[in-house]
Image (cartoon, rainbow over all chains, first blue to last red; front, side, top):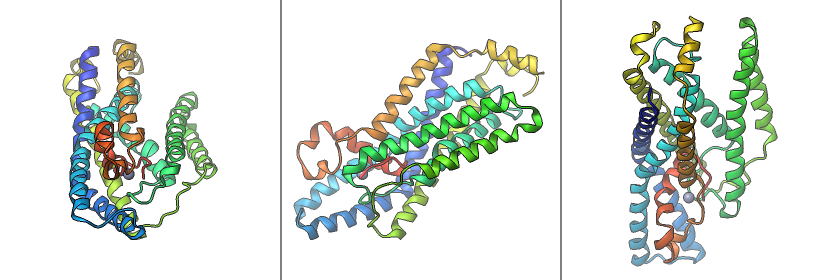
Length: 242
Length: 71
Ligand SMILES: [Zn+2]
């Protein structure tokens, strides 16, 4: 595949999957964001930081509309970005991935990345709706979250490299190794310092919707890039295992 | 079979330029959506926000929804 074609299909796949992610979020996550911000506003009125005036609500509606419309655009940006990473990993791992066609391979890789880069970090540092996070700790939380994702991702690559050196019947040990390693990291990493004051129901439902949204992204990117690859890869005719 | 795959790898070798370009897209996009700071609360509560923070607010909801740390 030509370099330019490769880059283009990776970016388009990411943008598309991100569009789907943003749209799904728009439908299922926004109601929870509204609820959480409603609580936040109530707290502001009670503490006297803001007054419950018509002007406040006009301004509020204006910026919420802007934020909501941003959900979809940000989905496209984030999707293109994560899709770029996915494209790189797929290009390097495609031949090693099991499965007899590119869509299966791509979906499998998406599943692995969903698990190692999203689900496992999520279990340690789950998503939170507005009002939960403390502005003072946001840099610390960003560092913790990003570090855990990076550790999990690099560990997955490392243990995969190790598995290639192992005999066939011992490959399972690499998987177990990853499991043990990431469990240790999981307990060694500091907790999210913020205390949750929002209703737990709201937080849990928000988290579920958040997972559904991100899952829709990984499923989409797996299918879309796989389809593009199968359609455009010149190896389609020459290889004998598709 | 495995030899054939080896040939495919090198024939399909991924140019460094493509990896570089995609890495930049990855880092830049992730930063904009996930970690760019300075937006918190200010848009509702401060007028200054309507200049620089416009973009940040635009990515705000996705930041929460995708699990990135925020407010
Ligand atoms: Zn926020």
